Length: 98
Image 1 (cartoon, rainbow, N blue to C red):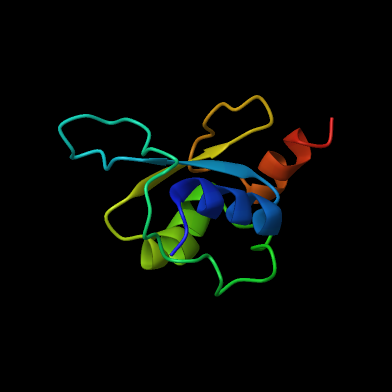
Image 2 (cartoon, rainbow, N blue to C red; image 1 turned 135 degrees about the vertical axis):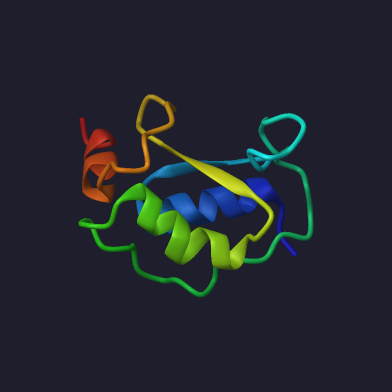
């Protein structure tokens, strides 16, 4: 099974934006999950990017959470800054084009 780093790169390749795995908000500390953590499920179910009209929150609910229960994720813009959940995926992807 792949590492967190591998999964983050695979998501970026398919979805067109970077992500960062983080510990859940209800955890004692919210921090990045180490990239070398192993035994993560593949992001293999998806071969096409999610719809541009989806929000970040929708992508997390429909694609991330079902595959990676027990983890939270931050969707990052081109400046590696987390974007709010109400941001459309098209907006996030467009940030990488400038």
